[in-house]
Image 1 (cartoon, each protein chain N blue to C red):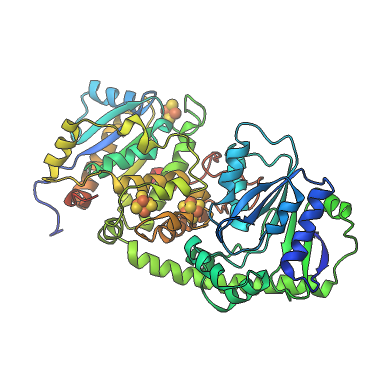
Image 2: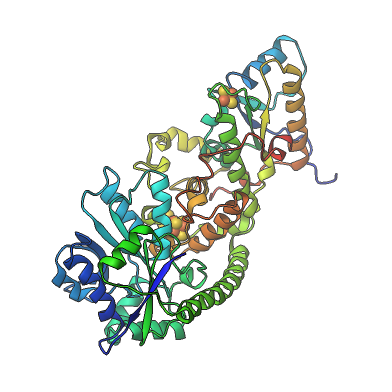
Length: 144
Length: 375
Ligand code: SF4
Ligand code: SF4
Ligand code: FES
């Protein structure tokens, strides 16, 4: 693990559905669960309101990663937003992967409102993975 | 099973034989108008024209190897608000037809009251190249096609296209594998197509030998094209795989957005990149510039191309219009087509294959792609 950047604190954007992951983050907080502070959360009304454009905007703007949090299949308040979002994110990841642009910096997770523990664990997991990956190389170019 | 009738090519040649057919369609009132390539009165250009008078068809060059605009865009602008009340016959190339099918599914075009006449395509040249070519050569269609067969003067997009025969036309003008000085095949693929052939008095089934000659030629050409396509993807990959290479390629982009403006699949009235979401004040630009010490202006070249891919690539038909429109000749066609083929494969989707196939980003399955949320 020589090439792990020393003292690197990744920053990632979390697009959290109001009805599930955003609430789960409150649960984690009010239950005083410990998790790293590397996420910059943005509340959305549904995972499907996250056009991949915003994921790209975050990544190209210098975020080291992006996580989208939605309701478990069957629980989306708008019936199927999460399942449509899943297809869009697969498209996004396929595009990036085809061009070797580190699609592994993007996560889609289902975390329901009561799952504070899962939320905290996910934050720990993503922060750890991003630390191992190092900073987003797009930051090295001003000409994008 | 498609019904196919042989059309004899007489002394007058291929173009006249085809034009004769088109004239009949219009004169007999089978259609009220035809959208068909005509040579312009001033210049050599052949452009799509909406024809209502039979005698105008003397300038029709339905097979001229040039495609200035993807006709799906034209049909979309004609029918987006409401479908045509009169019958319009449309002479259309396979990639245009596939784009049209996508636009119909996206509710951006209507083929109601249209008779789709698809032609087997030998490829098209850039508008400029065609103009030079047409100055030097007698515009005999068979002559064009012969030259095309012998040289690779057609656009790169056409050289690697494996969908050179129309997939969903009412009537197909079958040229591949035919002796173009003797006979071609007219195929009716739909009930409407059959009625039209009947109205034209085109009875009787073509010799099965002739039809199977076309089928064989098609499968042979498909195999050749698939091979060429894969080699082309390899070359493209070498230009765009990895951030450094992609940025090198995109470093020539001037952000004119021509590639989007001509793309049949970019139908939005207002593109995200032109929307207020992308209007910033000086302070925001300075904030970005401060992060990296400098900021390329205008901004967001990579964001534009990646987002455009995200929004249209499940439907990219590989017409190559994007590349034609690029002032700096960026290899955008290769980039879009290669990424498109990867993405389309995920959903086993072929754009324009059928109006029945639902758009991948419109439907979903409850249980699928589950690896994604576990990664
Ligand atoms: S991206 Fe290019 S090749 Fe694909 S549909 Fe648009 S114009 Fe045609
Ligand atoms: S047409 Fe060429 S220069 Fe213009 S935006 Fe597209 S890639 Fe860039
Ligand atoms: S409401 Fe939570 S994902 Fe749709």
